[in-house]
Length: 234
Image (cartoon, rainbow, N blue to C red; front, side, top):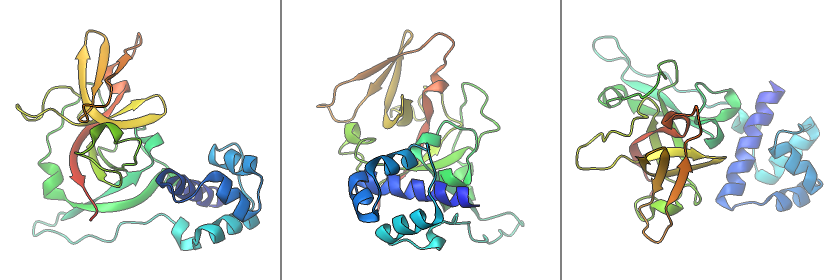
């Protein structure tokens, strides 16, 4: 239980740092830690004592309830007895290419109408049938830099991980994908040229990026899935 709470706290600290609300140095200073202590915690090289967790939570104005997984509320039933809504997890970017997720990798749940999700057409290049199909990702300035002005930081992307084909979903519109390049997640258009993946941006001032498919690797080792829906907070 404590390890799950620490995983959740680690996620929240990373989110604050990514958004620019906090720095690791600032957190260390205000909580009375060495910088290395915070770095080791964020990189999962060490945990925190209960007292240390309390100090971090005080700096971040968090309660214990903020560290508990946000379970989806009971959903109403349709006339045929089926659920009206499905709960889709918002997950940390580092877990996007995992089949399933631990509690520390789920930030919260968001409800979508089941009828809407069922209308989305999958297309798998490899077998991901046992993967959680739909996941949500919160964008930050790094993940969407190449896609301005179509995307801005803070958008929520609904990703269909059962669509890792490069075939167009709509004939006259390029698919928007979430891809992994090293430790980085980015949103872009994707093309395959020979054994090379090209990540194409929306922002023409952004340079193209290329990834050479390594021997034994498939497109699905890089493509998380197709962006099926974009929500922007106003």
